[in-house]
Length: 388
Length: 124
Image (tube, rainbow over all chains, first blue to last red; front, side):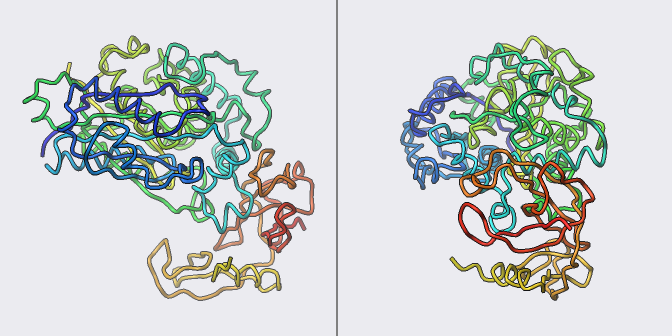
């Protein structure tokens, strides 16, 4: 089985671009990835495209062929939809295609246009990732869903909002030098605690913003990289995916995320590593509590122990295992269908040494990305390693 | 729109004859279901929903979707009814007075924005 290398990454700025179409956003990211990879367009054999709510925000279904066209590619294109994990799944399927020998080159990524919608309409569109009959009709929103998990966590394990505020402060600090990030603004613990409530106990600064943006990666086989003398030092060495009941109330324990545990177990076994080998992580911090649930699910902390990680400084840029050096969803932004690809683009830059925060992980060789859908009814984990 | 399985279930709650589906292993679930999502059994029977459940977790939502704009702020709770849990809007008390462990009853109310039926968890 061949290895899979990241030959090029492309990102748009993540932020408010209400006037820009999704097709233009993805075109920008895809062309940037193509240019960095130096792979000629006729060599790209498939486009794997992640998108969640384009049918609602742009009334555009059947987006994948359109996106291939915008990327200047004439090849089969498929849209992957797994809520906020859409691009993670698109990348995973690209990894499988290359490994199987089905393709030597796949362009994978995703896009989401969101800020053209009102807050109420974007809240409604995001909520469609939950159970329509039994959760959405009952008034559950996405911030509400994570608030239900957060209170369940506090009840079961303890911890307080101030612990979580340190997650937001950390991720805003990490986003400061990232040219692609939505927020370039340091915040304080008091600001997080005093922010208006969205869905108590989740306040405005516990939540990721609403974001437009796109991500793209050119993934190639080891053989293709070697034959074409590509400069592609980062490989995807592990991939895993886990699932869970869609509705929160159907899960045994509301304060843990077994889909992440399953995805991590598969990805670590695939890469031949353990949680202890992981030197840096990009996790799905759509809300501050989500970062904690991810770190526990990925095996870095026992259940109930991860909540103090940021406050203790273990996950900051200078900590023992930096988490979300890109700024995370919280401060870099969360264009839902693009996020899973963005995490791998950021991890690639961090490991290659050309990310503004690479200085904190100069000697690191192994990083992990974690992309979650809904209330973690889907989770995708990838292991990335760099040649040193 | 008709949603077979769900509509009858909600009507049954409204009539005071609430139920859930149960497999021989005792896993509870909400209709429509053909197999138990926990053990795969297709031997599912109706069981009576207990009259009272207890709040396991809740949130006070200040920013809802368009279908709930006349409800804000409102409390959404996940309530433990023994072998099954329900998610719903808590009524009959101020959202600020909802607590974990609080007893509630499953009822059917009206969504104040859309006029549609709404699963309500009424404080006892």
